[in-house]
Length: 270
Ligand code: DGL
Image (cartoon, rainbow, N blue to C red; front, side, top):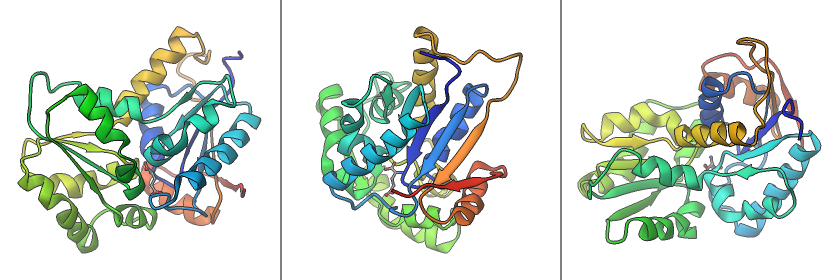
């Protein structure tokens, strides 16, 4: 396979940019095509059959753009139907689940304190992470909480202020009171609320953004295959952005989230 091909990455909206920003630091020379399905976001209350269909539509399109790897930068899409794309292609398709497990147990050693997990309603209701944790750490307390207001806030570019603080308190107070010492951000939109969440939790709570582990996994995979792009010196790769909704809006909110201007956003509807 040609190493010079781009990496495709997608989410329901701007959330996957929290994954892209970490990948860009680790693998800046790679070319990336990012797709945010903003016309159909949020995914958090969608049924499994809808999510599987969206995954297939977006996955097929990214494959038609000649991607050498697909990253499902959305926990909801990962747990409700990543296999739909995997069954169709030889191209590696990597989702968030393994990264969550690696990230959660990376540094807590023999610690047996309760783990908190926050995600969309569809992800929590799927029970996928509860099952995976019960297998990996039997007997360890695991509290899963859905936070349905978080994604709409982030999609509007709101990451601080009274509305965020109210939601953070409502969702996270039970986890804080349960003595959670590790909090896993099980939705790629949530890292953008990092400051608000940190201010609310007790000091010393470890927050896990699985994107860090995902970037390590992608790096290791590209290295092993080998599929890493060959670039001259520190040359930065290209970035192309697409969304299914309003491109101007994605450009404005996405630039805010990425912390740098997104030059151009194309529209791709399904
Ligand atoms: N960012 C996504 C996730 O990780 C989906 C959020 C949504 O659209 O509800 O689950």
